[in-house]
Image 1 (cartoon, rainbow, N blue to C red):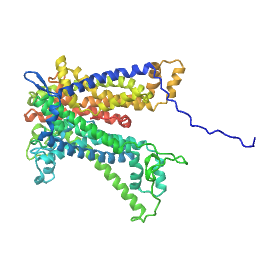
Image 2: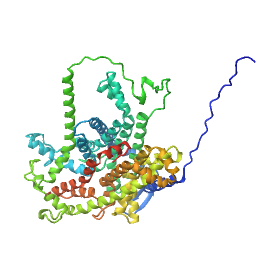
Image 3: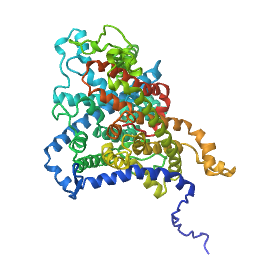
Image 4: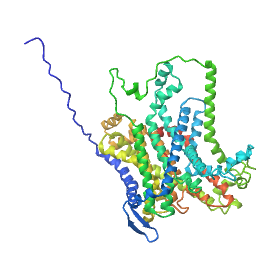
Length: 632
């Protein structure tokens, strides 16, 4: 034999597919949530789909099965195409506006400065307000004869600029989109802020050492890092814009004429005003399909790419000279000629920063301050012409009339004012129960999904829950109305609790899953080795760790329940079950001038709990945004 040793060629090991064994506890943990979602989302969706295949006579209650006849008739519906165009325009403005403003807010609040906590709380106030409250506020500010905007113009000496702001159709559509942006931009800011706070500071420090300025760092580092956040934000912002209903219902009712009639409003009119349930369901399913298609497009454009090969130095080799996290490599440092001395540039930068902070504060706080001022203004001052925002005196009579009905003689006959206290109790009771149920079931399911998210059955179930978030409430409210009416549950708080769970159970599950994913699995194993059952380990060991997540989830669920309007509007008809958003909307149907003061007082009372939550629990709300939570 020669001195050389023959070494046989090594074959790559054959990968064996290892099937993860899932303990029965985790199936039991997700079962209540999946069953509840199936009952309160799956069944109503199936029923509404069946409705869309029929034409129903509301007088004779006769059903005529037409198959896809309702859908086949839609392409020839001129109103549908006009509404689709308005919907696209409204959604484009809303998505662009909320994303741009949200980015400005997030970058501002990510910096360290004196008063950041106060500014963050103020920025959250518009989002914490119910859409109905937002609509009430802005509809009066934009009112033609005695609106707040015209009052400010008169007070400043520019009466020639006063105009009926919502009287022109195209301008009304733009103003409603602006109000939607004002209401929704803080949520986008929360989600982007959470992404910014998770970004390693070393990335920017290294770029600064290489000579990169703020703009170059933003384009090459910040934007790529925020790409997953921007994907989720784009999907949620688009869905919220497509499903916008509350603000339209309060501010324009689809008018003037049909200038603000979008698809959601057209579906509502068809189903609940003209009682064409089948045709209305078909329109709403078109809206649902549009949401899914746009979500797929967002994933295709902004979604994660396939993993690239790893270079010898351990860095990810990405196309186009990109580095870790998919961020473009910064160009080599090139000395730049300074236009201004460094001290002057620093002073200008600081001045610009504080100017932006002041503008953000005024943007968020001034409308709310106007609402508070109007709630303290005598009713006669609110309707005087020419309009003025300066009250003749400050009074608490408006609050007395809603909290102590009958104590103010001039306002004793306001029926809506007398309903405010009970509606506040209804909102609190429904919100507390729904939040408790959602947190309990969401915690169990979130724990199971976090520990076995790779198991096919759990993965499929988790994505099914996410898809329910893309279902418009209008698609569900129609079968809810028919089903609850048959079961005798119309005009009950039980109906509201059940319907609210349709969108809050998936939300709470996704939030809690994110929190449990941040808990090491070694804690589970250690507890089991010590003799704990899985339920005891969850209760004694894991829940204290994820307590901030539980608080954040409960806050989001309570706020969403407190502010919900659509289900409460359709499913309740008397004060015994009506919530505060429905009562606020009822004020607008009264023509008496003396109801304006109590209306604004009731609006202030309706926004007080959410605003208090925003101020007291802002840290938890940021953590909740990091978990992918949303409020519609």
